[in-house]
Image 1 (cartoon, protein in one colour):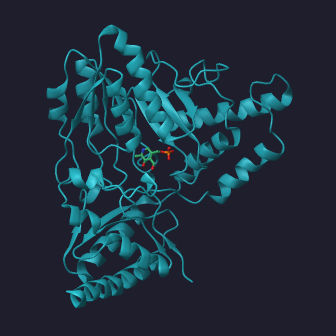
Image 2 (spheres, helix red, strand yellow):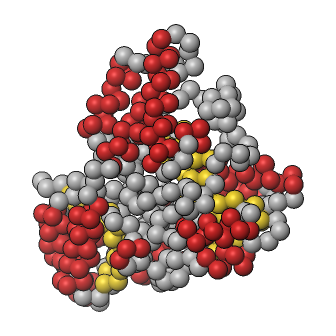
Image 3 (cartoon, helix red, strand yellow):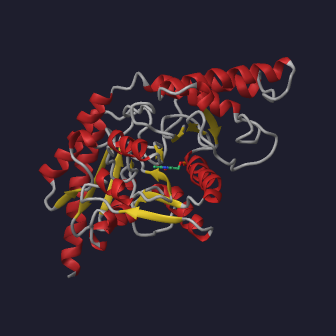
Length: 384
Ligand SMILES: Cc1ncc(COP(=O)(O)O)c(C=O)c1O
């Protein structure tokens, strides 16, 4: 059966070149990077050269990159680490948005129990935050603004440069969760005035359970994990050497991805759905302010779960709501925040393209979608 994977925002297939690059770090260079012998030093060298690659990709210094276990850890560390650093000085206010990933929102909820005050700013119908709203929400107690670079469900890209300028002027720290945008669109920590950035490997054909947090030189932050003092005393735990080596390889490979081609395919899918299927709605931003790989559509009078299951039967893998929420069946806080009714939320499907998605895959998905949506709508009419 044909297999068309359109769930690349959930995770990506590990690239063969990544696999090839990491294998020696399982088989030959398996030493602990903290060991002084040659086996350990080989592993250490690999980590440090990976650090340079990751740093360069966001215009940072290698010593500003701290390896983590992924996006969830990076977001937890940024928020908790800064809160516990700033709270003793009377600073307890965080500004974030209603459409952040749960690893931000649930961390904020937990921090509220510890004494934090959190402002959750709303977004407009395309998912944009207004930078002015951030400016007006900053108080004397604000220590942090955390706004994601691009949304995982609807692909909306925020105006980080404008937000960064405000934070810089107001002397408030600025963090972004770039798990979905990293390497797909440009991210320059200096240009955007970023103090902290969360990135991970498994969205870019690297290995799951690997990521990094950029922390600008001079910023004070409490560690999340205590132990042997790895990562310059800030993130203890023996490093995931193969994961880190693979992460850097994935970043190198990403330079070869043709995002213009991906945008053409993305728009072919959007236009094709609008051309062939009546009563559909595109969720998220239009055009350049949308991630090159994201399409999110509500199909009126269709249950997203049923559509997803039918598509799977035809070998097409998509996501209903946010796949990161792992089967919780919870409503989508993102779709709700952009004003979708519960029915519209239930009828939404996220398609996310990958670097290997082909024109013929999109044609096939369009053909199957057209037939399936029609069938599901007919069945609903008969039941009435
Ligand atoms: C925007 C965003 N942030 C954070 C995460 C969590 O990353 P990880 O799976 O590496 O923990 C995800 C995962 O889907 C995400 O999409």
